[in-house]
Image 1 (cartoon, rainbow, N blue to C red):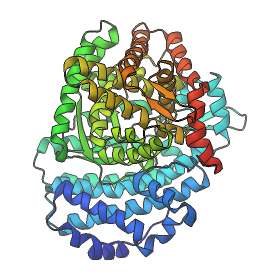
Image 2: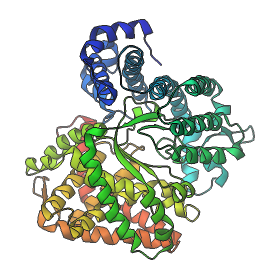
Image 3: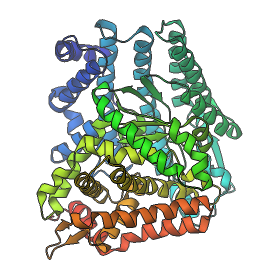
Image 4: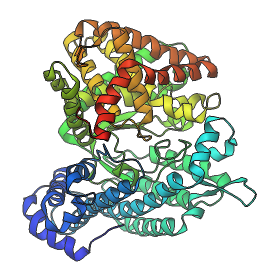
Length: 571
């Protein structure tokens, strides 16, 4: 993994970052530091090799990935992928070095505990980058990967291999084996554990404005280290569940988030990928956060009205959940490649039902994705002005919020024992997208949205799905692609979407409510099947959604937005 010296980072900080701070504090200070790092990556001669890692003709493509985590056109886990990932880590290293320098030299506005927490998080993030590269190459490039994928689809793999925290191998006789991450990656995990030791020791000595926050964080970070260091396969799930529980007790404006998502990077879609982040509540969006709270109340009322067992079990989690718009001062590990616009965690049903969930919205990620979506929309629309229906704040409040809150109840993890592991992963995101669309109808009925807003939000939702077609072969976003395919097929069937003789797309707002009504029917069929614990019905819904791939509209969009671009044909 490429790196540069602390001396060089200090020089760049003094010359470019420090003069731009001008009394900025807390989140504003961190945003200014990120802005400087972003500009340097695009213009400074020291980063020219990073910009040209795939050649001059692909410079803009590399910069999109490095700056905005938009990896369109870069094949997952290919040689090009790891070259660009390496360039991405350089930008993050610079950003984190700037943060450490500013925390040491300026009036930053953080209390002693929070400043130390940020400092150590910036160091830990770099170690997670190194681990992720090794992990991704192991699970994606190992000779076993195609075999595991095939036998998973055929239902031939032993259940124990679906442990979230192991690497699968084979012995001399061809029998499957598995090892805990700490056993398989001793060098990478030892480096991370040493950084945790230093972090915990320093934080124990730091003064905190709120002693309860300090106590909760020390317990959490100690358990984080313990979970990472666990070598007994039989103990892994228990250690990581305990980590989830300790994390849920932390109620603070700065949130450290551990490796928690599975299904985005391995053939079995069950392994938790290395990830690490630090998130700060962004007070700029206080009005939007208040609207999200009202949307959550509307959703609580709807689910309270359902009589099924999962509604009763999950309503407490839904009510306890905390949601807000956060700023992420740096990215690391999986998030350098797959950055969430929103996230609802933890995933374990047992923890959710007891503690609720934490829901994070990332406006920076959302805005970057929307620029791509607008470009794609203009390529396919008859009326290109409809691309302007897409806007960052509206997306977070009326789309991503309901999607992520929807993960808090009726999660497919609740019925994991009666469906395939792959179905749990592949259907959960489409289910959450259905939740978001169903919620539009609830907001209209509750008077929190008028018809025009519903029509605009629905158009925005559909047009943002075009990103899935432009990255059609990406396995990381496959669950979202399945949702996009089924939505567009349904939209054409109900004439909400039409194509003209040239293949250009027309959106008929007069059919918006018809489309949403049918979408609600599909949504509630999933909930009903979960309440009935009807595994075959859930699997049938999964197959029905995936079958949309063969529809004319999906084939047309794949050809226009993916195949032609891949082969160099004019769109």
